[in-house]
Length: 217
Image 1 (cartoon, helix red, strand yellow):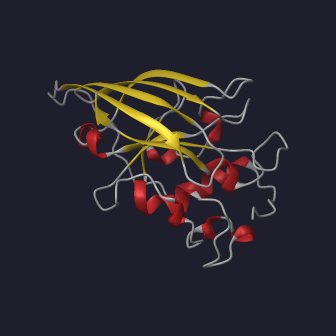
Image 2 (cartoon, rainbow, N blue to C red; image 1 turned 90 degrees about the horizontal axis):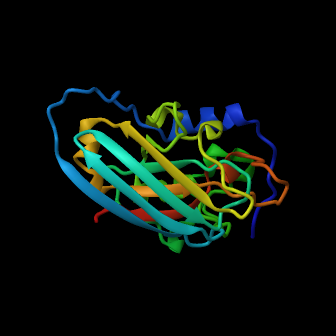
């Protein structure tokens, strides 16, 4: 059963993520000498239990510079959607199954948290043990792309009135992340669960709706 949602202002949403999920991320530095060229693709599939979205992400890498193209359908129309590269060698590095809905991580939204009681939705913190923390943010130019802005939703692109989102950007990422792209994931977030035309709380803004492993193209 979906839980009643409470209103939380956007700055609180961003602060909650920063404290709970974002990892410190080194600022990308040019001149690393790495000229490795690789092409990657992620098939984005709906996250179990959550409103379905799907699409593709293409990442072309030259050294620590990546060009990202994302196409997603089935999103909440006219809302901005956080999108990231997630992953950590300490995580399971897979998209979460329905069994991840165990309500062990919703402390991020205390009004909607009952420990150990599945709620029929898979929250961002329930998915994190599977796909890992935010490493790179697919924000709009010229906004920063680090994990520190992971859920500052205003920095991300919006879906059109049909729920379709297309994203293109070229930017630098830390070399240690560039070298591990094939072990990471793309996750798309955000759903207007109560139909009020906005994100009413952190759960709505952060809800993972599509996920895909990054594989060599």
